[in-house]
Image (cartoon, rainbow, N blue to C red; front, side):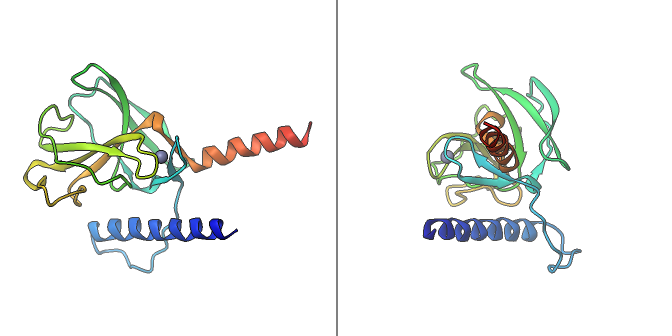
Length: 182
Ligand SMILES: [Zn+2]
């Protein structure tokens, strides 16, 4: 029970931080009192750690993408999923969010970027260290002091490594229904 409460508290802190960061980055037209409804949580498929929220997804085309398709994420939101290839020939399906939770990691790389003008570094889950995707920051501000992307940067998450909480809950419901009817 205590553990549950702690998790709840951590989640609320996390959402607050995300919303705050997002609010600071957007224009000030909207009242701060405006209610933000979290559409869905994006969580690490390996360990269930909160990574981001569906509200923070946005679309930006990579000129190097091999393909791009719209994927329905939640009832109200679809995201652009792009297929990209790294210099080793490994392909990934990625989608973009303005903020995400990643472990602090080493310097920015300028070579082989999927988004020209942006430097990158990997994004690994702070809890289980699974590769979740990459962080991108404009080349001019990708300095050693800038550990994480600024408001001008973003995160590309690997579609297969992220799952929505709504989907997890729907699976749990199916399992419960199957158990109850057994
Ligand atoms: Zn994880």
